[in-house]
Image (cartoon, rainbow, N blue to C red):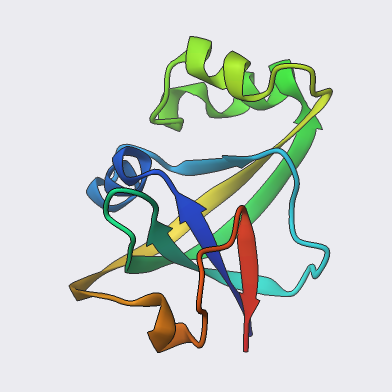
Amino acid sequence: MKTVLLSIKPEFAEKIFDGTKKYEFRKSIFKNSDVQKVIVYASSPVQKVIGEFSIVDILNDDIETIWKKTALQSGITHDFYLSYFANKEKAYAIKIGKTTRYKKARALSDFNLSFAPQSFAYLS
C-alpha cells in the first residue's frame, strides 16, 4: 500500500479529524495511482504529524463540478475554494475515509523526512 505525507493547514487538519471535512482539495495529485493512505502533517505553527486517513476516492473534474459534488462536506467556504483554485481549470478532491488521530503528535524525522513537503511526499 502506497502512502503519502500531505502538508495541511492546522485548521483544515483539525476539521478532518473532527469529521467536518470529508474532502481534501488539491491543485495537483499524486502520479502514483496506488496511494491509499495519507499521513497528515499539520503545517505552521503546529509543524507536527498528527494523524492519518485512508483514501476512498480521488475526484478530478472542472472546478465548479467538484464544488457541486463536495460542497456539503468540504469543510471550507465557497469563497475560500474559489480563491484556492483561482486561475486553475481542474480541481482534485481526495475523499477521506477512516481517520486515525495520533495520541501523541510525531516529528517529520519519524517518517525519515528532514523538512515538510510543499504539497506531498511519498513514504516508503
